[in-house]
Image 1: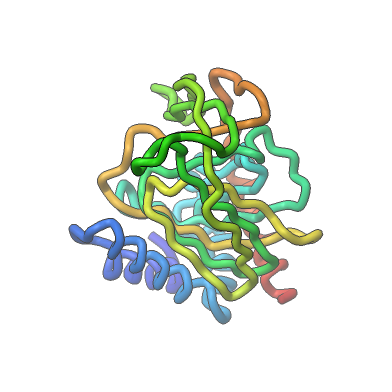
Image 2: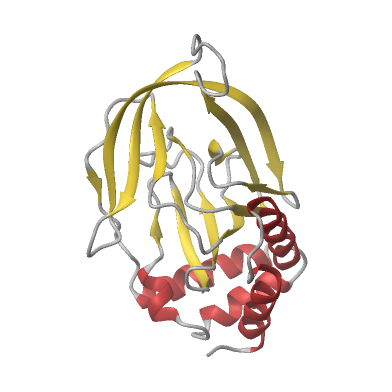
Length: 247
């Protein structure tokens, strides 16, 4: 199901990512794929094809929404448990409920900056790796999982922690990065205009929960996801195509 670009993208994802790869190799392969798909006109052609109704708009719309970290999350290709290709539209000063959160993921990921610029910080938990746990930033720790029977986020308190900042970086248009699943990080739009990234989550052996740390006060126990309906999803893809044409 899908047009020429949808089928070609599915084929590239399967060829590069299917199989039993070690996590580091899987992250590297994912980084290659997002750079291949995100550069030139290939992404614009894919987005325009999806905006016309190709692919699986009903299923993708159900998994597309405004993320608590403050970006619009648009699922492009649903590869089941092995890979999910998404477009993220980051808005400056979006004010999402979790915009200050430091978190990791359920599986290895890679991202390519199509437009704008992202800033990113990497962290580690103090007291791990043999240090004495002194210093760092105090934070509340949560285990985040998906609610049974829905895709809402459930946040279970998991005590207090201290985090140490290990890296600060900026990723401009044309750059990419890959992260293993457990890497703690925080990212945000680093310009006064929206930033567009192509994001690939991959790997069949996904963790049951992620770790979320916040220094901004307690979180609610659950956060509702409000998925897009199909017309809004297709409109969001059309708007994204217009952004890409303006590059």
